[in-house]
Image 1 (tube, rainbow, N blue to C red):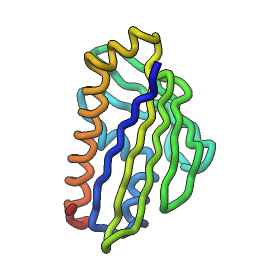
Image 2: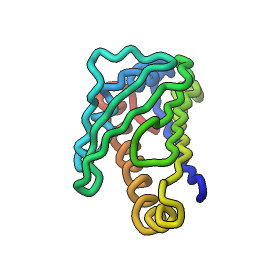
Image 3: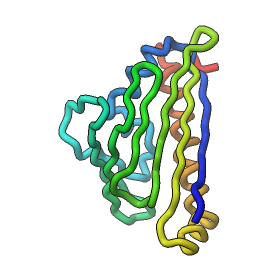
Image 4: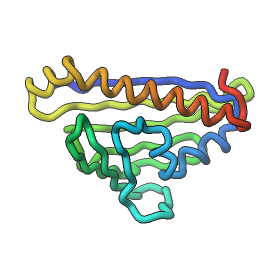
Length: 157
C-alpha cells in the first residue's frame, strides 16, 4: 500500500483575501468539479467554514453513487485550510489548500495525499484508472478556476 501525492500550483492575479473568500464558500466546490461527477453538497446551507466543520457530498464515479464526508482539520484564513475524508472512496484523502500572497496576486497550492483501499487491487486500480481520474479532475479544476477568476475578477497569469 502506498500513499500517492498530487500537487498543483496556480497563480491568480488577485489579492489573497479575494481568492480565499471564494474557496471558503463550500458551495463553490460544485462549480469547480466536472459535471460528469454529478457532485452535490448534501450539508445544509449556509455552511460556516471553520475548524471541525463537517461537509457531506454525493457524487457519481463511473456511474457508481458515492457518499463523501470531510472534516476541516485546519482553518487559517486567508492562508489555507486542510480537509480530511472521514467517509468516502479512499482509504486516505488529506487535502491541503495553501494561499500565498506573491507578485501582486496569490499563489494557490493544492496538495493531496491519498491512498486507495483493497491493498494490491487498489494499487492496480490506481495504475489503470484512478490516478488519471484524479489528475483529470484537478486539471478541470485548474482550468475552471482560471476562467472564474478571469471573468472580471482579475486575469490568471
